[in-house]
Structure formats: C-alpha cells, structure tokens
Image (cartoon, rainbow, N blue to C red; front, side):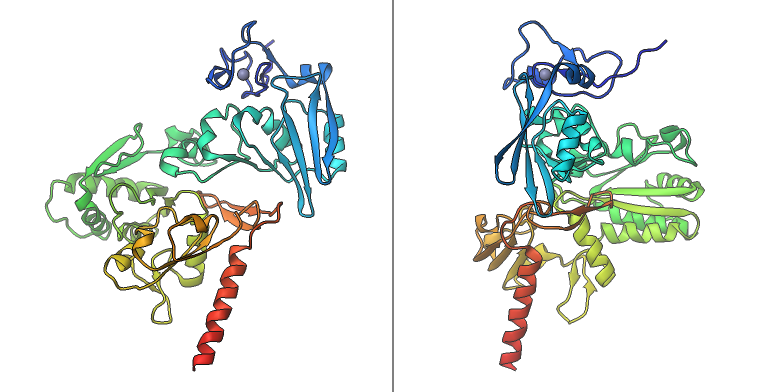
Length: 429
Ligand SMILES: [Zn+2]
C-alpha cells in the first residue's frame, strides 16, 4: 500500500511544505542566516500530530484585535492577530496549527476574509488556514516569493514583475496545463519563441525565431502579409516567417503572449497595436488571443477600464474632447517634446516614462508625497484602505475589500478634483 502524501511542518520554524510522502531533505527557511537549524537535526511534524500535542489559545489583545497562539510553545512561538473590522476580519500573520476548536471559535468571531503576512517566518500553515476559511486570499510581498514553500492558487503576489517574478505563468496558464482539447498539456502544444533584440522567450521552445529589435514591426507586418496571401519582400527572415504563418494558421487555438512592461530600451510603441492586429487577422482563419503580460499595481485593471470606456487599452489622447489612440505619442514623448506643461499622475508614479521633477506635476496615489512633485495627495492602498476590483495580470478579476480605514480613497479624490475643475470652468465662462 502506498503511503499518503503529507504536508510536513518544520518543527524549528513552523513552516508547512507542499504535500509529499517523504519530508523535505532540509528547510531553506531555517538555513537562511536570520533563522537557525535545529540543534538535534532537522525534525518534521504534521498538522495531525500537532492537533494531538498542542492547542491554540485565543485571547482579546484590545478592542477588535484578537491574538491566536499555540500552547505549549511551538516553533518560534508565532502568534496571529485577528483584526476585526466592520467589513470583515483580516488575519495578520499566521501560525502552524489549525484545528476544529480554533476554526469554530474564529468563525464565531466572524471568520476571515483575507490573510496578510508580514514576514516569511509567519507563513507557517497559511495555505491550510486559507483553505479552511473558504480559500481566502493571502497577501504576501512579492520580494518574499522565494520563501513560499507550499504554493497555492490563493496566493496573490502583489506588485510582481511578470517577466522576472511570475514563474508560475507557464505551469498555470500556458503552455503546460492539460485541458479538454489538449489532454497532454505541454506535449499537445507547440511553443514558439520570438526573441526580439536581447529579449529571450522560453528556453524550452519547440521553435525559435531571432529578430533584431529594429525589425520587429516589419516582421509582424510581413507575417500579416503572408496571412493575407501576399508575397514576401525577400529578406533573410522570409523563410522563418512563412513557417510561422503556416504554424499559426494550422493551429486550432493560437495564444500570443508578449511582455508589455517597459524594459531597458523604450518599448516599441506600435508593438501592441501590431500584435493586436495580427490576433484579429488570425481570428479570420482560426481562433487566437493576444495576452500582454503586465506588472503589478493593477495596470491590467486600468487598461481594461480604458478599453471598455474608449475602445483603446493605452495611450489614449482626450485633448480633442474625444478619445484617440496615439501609441507614438505616449506620456514620455509628450513630456520630452514640451507639448504638455503639467502632468497628473494617478496611482504609483514609479516607472513613469519621464522624470517626474522635469515637468510640473501633481501625484495622487499611495505615498505620493514621497515623490518630487509640485503637489501630492496621499491616498489609501488598494485592498488595505480601498475596496474595488483589481485585475490579476492574467486578467482574472479579484474583489478587494478595505479592512482598515486610512487615507482618502483615490477615486473620491479624483471625483472631488473633477468637481472643482468643473466649478472653476463654469465660473470663468
Ligand atoms: Zn524550518
């Protein structure tokens, strides 16, 4: 009889690992210089063993803050805090043990709608807790991703850079997962990497095409020409592009995934538009989707709203009173050319395509006052002080709640600003 997989817990640091029949060889969290390895050697336990040897104590610390700790002391003596708010309870930090009496007591206190963890030493049995309370989201800092030893769908990596920090894209969405029409997952799919300039696609691609950065748009145009049945212009890329066109038209479903974050070089402004046009054209002969991979900070959400409000996902110009798509004149180009005399930055101003102190600027967003702006209004952080909907970078909408009252909400500040501008303009006329 085969042994069942268990989620092993390190007795020294209290961290629970991905289910496995055998416990891990060692504990990377204990081997980190901030922790220490058990003097008796690495030892492991499980939730079931802990439930027999330990209990949780639930104690009101102050109004609305309830401490949950394990007795006798386990691991580094972690404790969790249940923060009660009118919108629901947030579990701040976590512990290794969860049992029926704890779950019932926490449910009687209003349950948990989200878990946030300050430090990897409190990851403990966070996935077990999340699942126990209806798969509630766990908010972790993206920089601590490497310390997550029990991955879970419920983890939201806030502020991740998709290229560098979203390694599970492949295993979750493309190209690895099996599906109804792709029963063998990766083996049912063909993976083509188009390496543009210094950028490299997945190493395990079935086919690679190398394109100089300055040939990119021409290559997309040539591909569209082949799809439209027109002859190619006779460049060294013709053979590869003709092959790629054959592959794309023969496929039952094409997914074009591109990096939509600005890199070391300024992004080719027309790339998004050209790839979108390619996707539209492919839909005439097969089915195709185009997926830009964006970073965190709900940029995907902002682009979704722009797209359904204006028809364009980005670089929308409203200066004529109606939306126009102007990919060649993004904010960076407009500031550089001196065409604008003031900039309003909403959200996180990090990564703006211009130096914020090079132009008269107003920032509205979390920690805006830390920027060298002429005026700044600090607003709350989404998911902490502000509710609403955020889009994960793979376009999955996530409802956010605001467990903690804080600075003003960005949307309210924007509405108030629009109202003031409207009043001033009507006074002037
Ligand atoms: Zn450990």
